[in-house]
Amino acid sequence: MKPQDNNKKVKHLFSPWRMEYVSSPSASDNIFLDALKANNDRESLILYRGVLCFVIMNLYPYNNGHLLIVPYRKVGSMIDLNEDELKEIMYLSRESMKIINEKLNSDGFNFGLNTGKCSGAGIKDHIHFHIVPRWNGDNNFMPVLGNTKVIVQGLQDTYDELHPLFQKIS
Image (tube, rainbow, N blue to C red; front, side, top):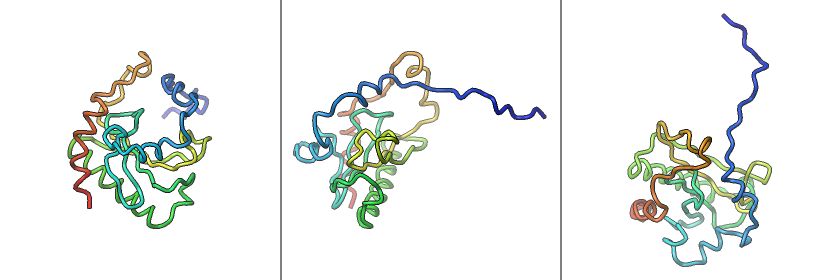
């Protein structure tokens, strides 16, 4: 048995297309509150409005069907959420995964949140949970070598496919 080589170099994957998004100044204090006020859920990509939280599609998705679960109340940390908000976020996350499984046939999910600027939170003052559908083999050479991320369906097409199922959430 060969001893483990602890001097192996760490490999890095670069996502240069994200730099434009993370370094550009925001046109608004809060894109989530702007989307809620717009009163055009399809244009704003809001799939569902709950009692305390809502489901919105990510405008810059990592994968097709990348959703965000967002409380209406603007808080910057999970610690600041109340019990009812936490329950609704978990419920909407589970229901979102069911819908994505049904309509987009995902093989799995990445689910979580970034809290604070140092964690990569692009919108650090309004917590939001990510649901990123995953499929076997969905990573390929395009992002690394071609500086291109392939999203297999347009945002509005995905919205139109998912929206009817979100209207059945009780």
